[in-house]
Image 1 (tube, helix red, strand yellow):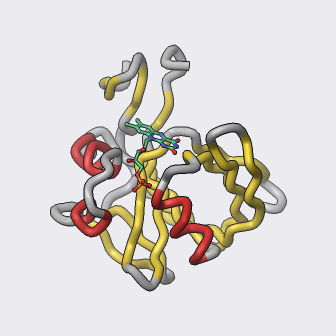
Image 2: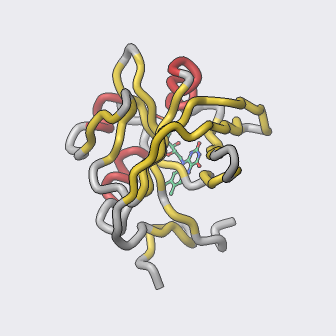
Length: 146
Ligand SMILES: Cc1cc2nc3c(=O)[nH]c(=O)nc-3n(C[C@H](O)[C@H](O)[C@H](O)COP(=O)(O)O)c2cc1C
């Protein structure tokens, strides 16, 4: 699947322990009416645990200047360290990466076990868009669009 170019997102949530987030490209829109999102997280993802505890998550779609953000959130560094140096704010009680091309807030709807991952679906409660060029992941690396 390294042959399939994707955008790059940060799936995140906020809980009693503060914000949690992971870089994720197994993310897509699922339904228009009702508006649903889908994200797949590894069973070992700390963000998955936080999302299940909060019952909510956000998705921030990164622009091409945010490779550093994607790299930060793709690590197992202490959760609080991931957010250090990243420009973000809280919106509707959920993390939003500043200047993201798209930010979507979701109420967690379904949690479906699937192999070593878990499929999350979420009902969209809010969203915000911005213009810009997306960050692309292809061939196992971040690539310029085109
Ligand atoms: C481009 C890219 C896409 C990724 N997509 C996913 C994904 O869709 N689901 C997932 O569980 N992990 C994905 N990862 C790996 C997670 O970001 C990584 O395991 C992270 O450390 C999880 O952090 P957490 O344990 O704090 O949630 C991706 C990594 C990269 C670099």
